[in-house]
Image (tube, rainbow, N blue to C red):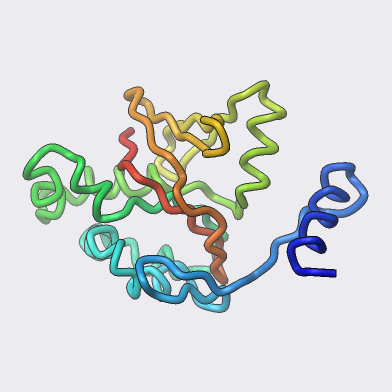
Length: 184
């Protein structure tokens, strides 16, 4: 039986309530770098060429130790291109020491306590009649819904972001790559 067939069978059994939903820990590529499920969120993210802005922001906000802790955390990780969509000068302004509080709020708005795989998020969306409200570490709410086969996040201001790569499993959680920065 192929790996895909085994995974499909396990997910079908999980959906029927026969077994807990599986979490298959595989090494995947993000931003040209291998993301190892045995490493933590920070140790993996620093190697992604697509997440250099996020890593710089996490360092500037003083969140490295938090995201290296046991967690678990679910991180909706904006790419460099996602940060580039913000108005000109926004990232530079956020990275200034005097704006650490605002930067921390923006970053922690991308983090949910717990380990939620794509299957978990989709199941919550289905259970919620098409929407699932996620409470972020920042304390705000993100609304998850489906747009075709993509998970879409809607922030407090009505901005939308799509998960472009799901289930990048980490030793202390999971990363879902997103195409837009969400704002509290």
